[in-house]
Length: 517
Image 1 (tube, rainbow, N blue to C red):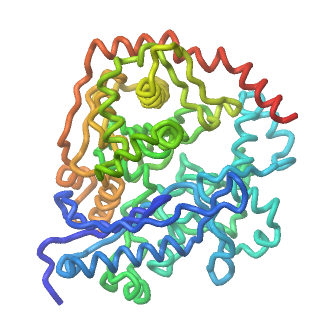
Image 2 (image 1 turned 90 degrees about the vertical axis):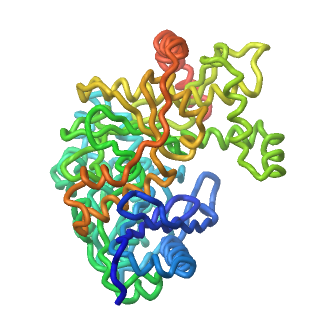
Image 3 (image 1 turned 45 degrees about the horizontal axis):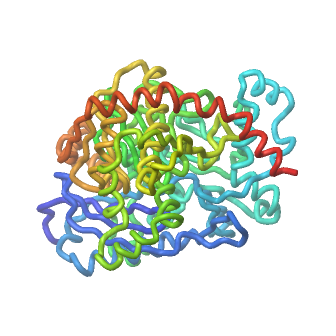
């Protein structure tokens, strides 16, 4: 057996459109990566999105074997492994722990009826605290509720209902165990105490998954098990390699940018744009909106989401940027590279064009719609593009300000990750909007980096997460806020953006009423 001279972690980042196998060393250096893309989903009906659960494991094996073929010597240095997975994807398993239906993905738009699911007494309590509509909407979004209502024969055969991360851990180890930091979805999980909800919990009936259908949980940085002999053959990973619990993709991103203490906020510019903070106390970012378990044990990541987030850039490209997309193909670059150059030509505030990014409903405003106000004949396509980025920023600023009040601390640094963070222009706009320095770390693969940090700590290559972060997270780029631009953004936020929803709420409700008829 070869001597381990440079211990490496192999981590798998399983997303909506691709799976990445990545090798990291203890200095946070990305040694090698293999990305396998696939069709994100199929749709049996408009708005539906499903995918085979086993596809993700097949792509893990494919990516891992491709990496091993290209980097055989590095593979001999692997000492640990972990998986980070997109959130809110449930898998129905039969008695043999095999999937009995395809996964209804997180972006699927179908809804359950969820009628008479909650006792009248509890409905009254939710109504008294102003959360009646929000709780009802959460129940409708629960995919377990939809399956129970619409596919009772499937639900009757379901022995275990697990998160996709749990299923992939099972495929690697033969153990049906998952991290507490991966239990983020429409499931009966007690986020404060990091365990399954008791049947007596006020919210237990929101997502009905009986206790016998649940699975075992461990804390992040703990070993789930060793890779099985069968999985070792399929992936090429040395037999007996410890598989360590990390967390969800967003939680690992937050860890991978070094956001584990008060005073730092982590922004993720992905399909769903989010802002997460770190707290040792359980503080809900909004009433009845849980703070998620962090990959840091005994810590939490309160989060605000802009559900469609940087998906709106995809929408913009499809609807308005055909010319730039074609030009980018000819030049062999991304369309964003061309579009982002126009951001510098448009002043802060987009000459009065203001966007509210509610392209999908939010928890406390299920009737909300997206809005763009302030159009004039001087506005161009470039103004619209910048207003989208600013609109996402305003939504994140709103969440940031609310969470600062609840957590009772001031933020002095913002870290960024996700696709949008690769743009210098987007990072500068973010610094200007928040009025706080924005930092990028050494790699775009921050979710994988976070999983690698947890994996190394799990096998005692580091004494604790603080030591691991000091060694593995390095800030390479910093963007200082432009004070004049910040004044413009702050004034628009306070005098315009904050008032849009309240002013338009009656019209949003009218739209819903009209469409129902």
